[in-house]
Image 1: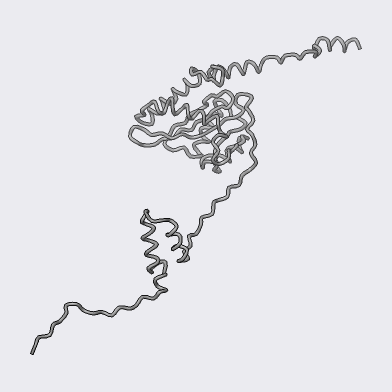
Image 2 (image 1 turned 135 degrees about the horizontal axis):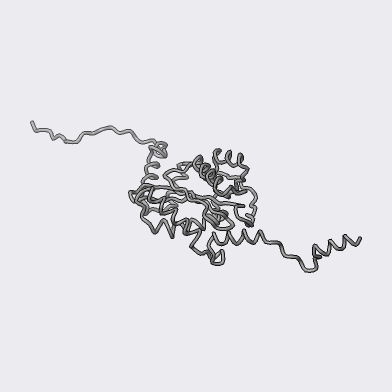
Length: 264
């Protein structure tokens, strides 16, 4: 009796795939094709989009947040010292890599740097303490121009300004040009001080920055002030304000008005 040959393979019954399962965008063949094609950057985007539409896939579009925009009012030019200040923050790092912040306050008329507060953290409460210190030293302005940062837009600074009678003027979001005075100062401050020094620690940073602030106000000439320092310009503007206004041509003198009154 001859021996029977047996095959080493085993036959298994497989279930025929359903055409509807192939079009399943998650587990079906169409879904796997789309996933593979999306990973292959060499394939045409139109083909991926055609299969994407065939599988009726939908991606929720994120609606853009609408920001209420008020009417743009031009910022009037400051006409005297202490009329309007501008505030903003700058960020830098110490020699050990730790970050610190500076609160820069500038007088818009004289270009004086009223104060530079240096610390690791400067929340809204710390900003009000700096302003209270300036209130005792030089007084407060009528208006302070700020951006929409959380330190300025919070309730702490808003309550402080209401109690002191100071108006907070917020610039439009994403428009730093509307706070041009302090933005210009920030550029000079970074180029001439922050980028030129290596701060060992926070105490060292405070000493160097304060020395630079004094030099900026009393020694460094400003082209916008006709080559004068902010301190010189402030002294000249105060002296000019105390002078008697010039008499217009054709305007009668005070003595002439007095003689006319006596003759009547």
